[in-house]
Length: 276
Image 1 (cartoon, rainbow, N blue to C red):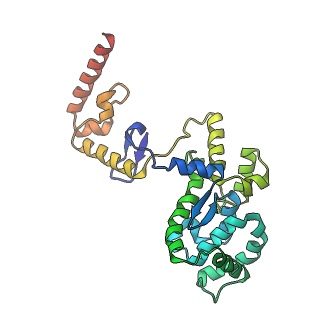
Image 2 (image 1 turned 90 degrees about the vertical axis):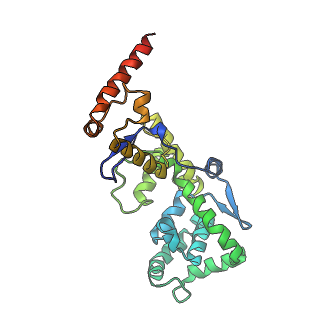
């Protein structure tokens, strides 16, 4: 069941009548298994929880606003994803000035030692070519976004009280939930796998609402169509197919009182056919 409350009046559309969210399932399998994505001759590892935690400590625009991500910031993301715990101390020492640098301007006037290390590494693996950058960014965004497909299946329980998505409370919660070591969850296990482990545990604990999300554009389309049918005094396809389980809403009866007789006739017909 999906509800759209953003229009003049809310409507409900049964889940089977709405398309599932479009997911590259093959890519998701590779990400969950820990494969590396080939991009311009460079292999981008499947990101782990610790990678996202480090990016959040300096408020990397790559997480929430990738369209604002500079070339240097993109290289930082790849560098942190590649070296992980090996660059933990470097990021910790750089992050305060890094935040300030990102606010001012991401150019050589604000670069710190960490930035120059990232820049030298980027040149070493030949990331400076325009061909690499044009191919890489959208692919890496999709690769990183794949990390959250499992989490997306789990209904929200209100979330953390922290302003951090990948803060210490999230780290502790995921370590406790998966039952794995801190090091494995932080640096070794792909975030994509962690999300699906969490979703699986929720299912095993009796949460029947764990499922793939619906396509948001199709949700809007189907809800708009349902709203139009109500205004036109028509019944929905699911009501025509299974009237007993989908009675008229008060709004439908209000817009077209004649629907009551039509619906009752359908129910009667279905019951009589069922007895034959």
